[in-house]
Image (cartoon, rainbow, N blue to C red; front, side):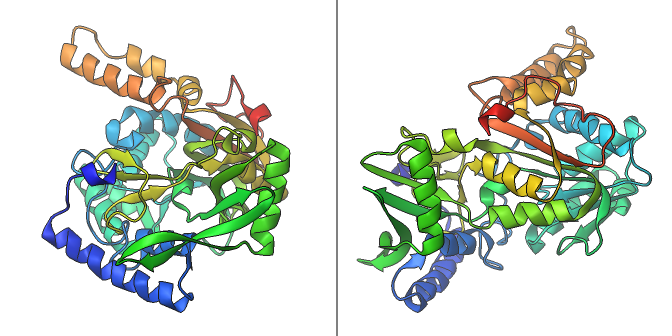
Length: 389
């Protein structure tokens, strides 16, 4: 598949070549087989060279993929209604967005929260990429200078727990993952090597932590023969850190993924790793590192286990389609005059992309955890999919 992808221009290839040199050095330092999660971290986040740090634009029609917020404002307007249902319960609440992409969602949320009379005291954005932070600042300044003044960018989670909402849209899927191969009860870790003047997969014995994880899911899911997949060793600690920074409020995550039984289903024997370049999905993570996105589906059971271990309560787990319907996406659609053909068709196409099963509607899930909340969080009315966790 990667052979049919359009070639990047010379400037982009130079960025990739520089990143590749650093990765090759790390392969050597690792003894010839670099763990895949270390490779993925470099490909996405290496300062100045990684996919999210090199200043090349990954979002929208000119980028590599279109996220829900990039499709139009209706996603942000719906999400704002869910967030407002929490902010209304808290005195002087704040909102913290994790990895704000182009900044479009932040702008849409602030605009709708203002309309709902539920603007937070501060809107924080946790962003590790200087290039992405600059893009977000330009987006917010262009939309409304007042919103730009309300936003504060953070390099790390707040030292003191906050009251409000912490949320991330398509963030967890970009956490680096370990890849493994299981054969007849034995697990091997898949890594990255340099062979025949190119990157290639290599295998090495799994450490005790990886072996224990693979043993548990292999037995629970009934694997036979051989099986290849991945898991994120950083996911549980990341979720616990997010939960611990909430004194009162909501942790909300939106991403593509499954409960553990579906994630590691015997028929999903090649894992969930995906790459995106110029609106094409493919499976070659070594194609021009730094110029393409590398993601894996989210194990939502691991998310739920980590969050509830901190004392947070599961508010709901559902599909994006049902969440948006619970937030009133049909009401927003009904507000548009069908006689305004252009606007009506534009919104109709936007809604279809967000809710239809063949697109984002079922593939994306929404999970929420509350702490010290007295009222229900909008968007999780029904049907609830927690039985799949």
